[in-house]
Amino acid sequence: MTGTTLVVGATGTTGSRTAARLIAAGHRLKAASRSAPSAAGADPVRFDWYDPATHDAALDGADRVYLVPPVGDLDPAAVMLPFLRRARAAGVRRAVLLSASAVPEGGPAVGVVHGALPGLFEEWAVLRPSWFMQNFTGGHAHAVTVRQEGAIMTATGSGRVGFVDADDIAAVAVRVLTADHAPGTDLILTGPEALSHDDVAAILTRAAGRPVAHRRLTRERMRDRLATVVPPDYAELLADMDRAIARGAEDRTTDTVQRLTGRPSRGFREVVEREWGLR
Image (tube, rainbow, N blue to C red):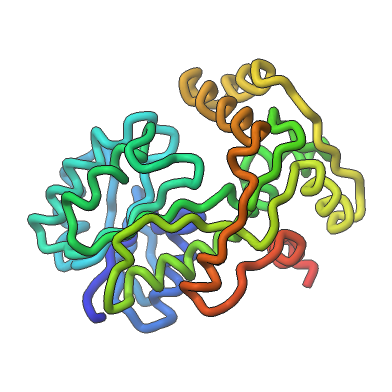
C-alpha cells in the first residue's frame, strides 16, 4: 500500500516509535505534534487537537492516519470526531486509533471514538494495548517514584497485568497502517505474561541492583495522590482502573503481536534492560 501517513502525536511514546518505523521502511510520513518537530525523513507539521486551524494543513495529502487521543481528556470525542469527519472529507481512507485494553468499544472517553470509527472509515483498526512497560522506565509517575523512592505505588493489590512494550505496539501500528487490508476490528495487545506489581518490583530490583517495593494503597489514597498532579475527575478514573486491575480485569495475554508481526511480544525484563541500557 502506498500513500502518506499522518501520525498524530508523533513525539509521544507510541507515535514516535511508529513514525520512526514508517520512515525506516521508506513510507511517506507527516509527523504531527504541537511543536511540529523536525524528523529526518518526515514532513513535520504543527497539530493541536484543540486548535482546528491546524487540522487542514496536517491532513493535506494524507490518506492514512495514526491517532493518539489528547492526553487526560475525559471527552476526547468532542475534538476527535469533528477532526475525523474532516479527515474523511479530505481523502483519508484508513484510520488507526490508539485506545486501551481497559476501554471497550462504546465505553468511556476514547471508547466513544472507537464506537464511531467504523461508520466513518471503511478501512480502520483500533489498537487496545495493555499498560505500557515504559511506564516504569521513562518519565511516567511510576518511573519517577522508582528512581526517587525505590517504590511503585498502586491500588492494584495482587492483580496482574499483561504489560506491553511500546515498540511492539508501534510494530503492530505500522503493520495495520501499511498492509493491503485493514483489520476492521479492535486488537488487544499484551506482552507474553501477566505480572502483578509485586512481580514488576522484583524484576526492577534485580535490574536496578537496589530494592524496589510495591506499596499497596487503597483506591481512595491512590485517587488523592493522583489528584495532586491531574484533574480530580481524571484521578477518579485512574484510581478506578487500578481497582479494576485488582479485580482481575487485565489478567490476560494475547498472541496479537505474534500474529501481526510474525515475532513474539517482548518480555518485561528484556524491555527494562534495553530501556535502561543494561544490554
